[in-house]
Each structure stands twice: as structure tokens, then as C-alpha cells.
Length: 183
Image (cartoon, rainbow, N blue to C red):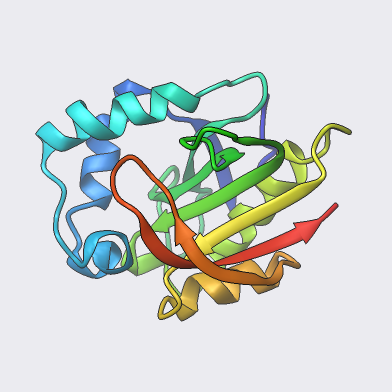
């Protein structure tokens, strides 16, 4: 699968070869605030936890995985400047009953990219492609209730509040808000 470029952004499917880019993004405590309380991720954790976890749901034909988002050249950004990424996988992938017809979207962007519309633009471009197959009925996203920035992105994607509840995950259960868009 391929995500077409937007006016400002390019997309590339991430693999274990992108460990350094994953690590770079996770070194900003503000970026990590609503992920793990603001703790930087070690390269060992990237290699031992993040990469195997990514590879467990990666399916490039379906578009599942992490899409690296880079900038096209502009007056303010150099070509291919790494801005962040968009996650795509079936909702509840790590639970006993994944929702194969419901695509979960997630995002993580450098602080320098915040407030410029990059995450919304990238998430919409990815969502439009990965939810196109007829077998996909919903697009969803989750966040901490305090993560207003992510919730605004969900709303820009046309998602509506579904519920507040416990998200079960092998790395730890979390109380999150769920947003969803019926397709």
C-alpha cells in the first residue's frame, strides 16, 4: 500500500531500520507526556519492545504499521525533514478479539510540528487510504482525556466521542477516551 503525498507531506512505511527515528522522537519529554508520563524511551526499549510490537501488527499490503511523515521542501522546512509518524492497526489488536473492521489510528509528532496542522493532515491522508477497502467499517483513536491536542485531531478527522473506558494492553491497562468514525 502507498499513501499519496499531500501538498506538504510525504509518507514512508517504517521498519526496524527506522529505529533511530523512533528513538529521536521519543527523546522529548513533552512528546512523551501522554504516552508514558514524559519519560524518554531508551534505544534498548526501542529495539526490545517497540520494534517487536510494531512488527507484530505490520502488514504493508493492508497499510498496518507506522507511517513516517516527512516534510516536502518549503520556505520553513528542509526536504524530507522528519516530523513524526502515524500508527495504523486493527482496533484492540493486542486483545483476544481484535476488531478487524475497525482501524485504529494514532500519531506522534515532534514538538516543532505541533500547532501547524501536520498531524491532522497526515492522519487524514493515511485514514483515507487505509479505510478505503469495503471490509473496513470504522476508524477509531484513543487518548488520555487530558490530551486535548490529540482529541482535536480526532474531531478534525470526523470522529465523535464514543466512551471513556479501560484500554487493555500487554504493556498496561489505561483509562482512555475512545473516538470513532463510522464509514
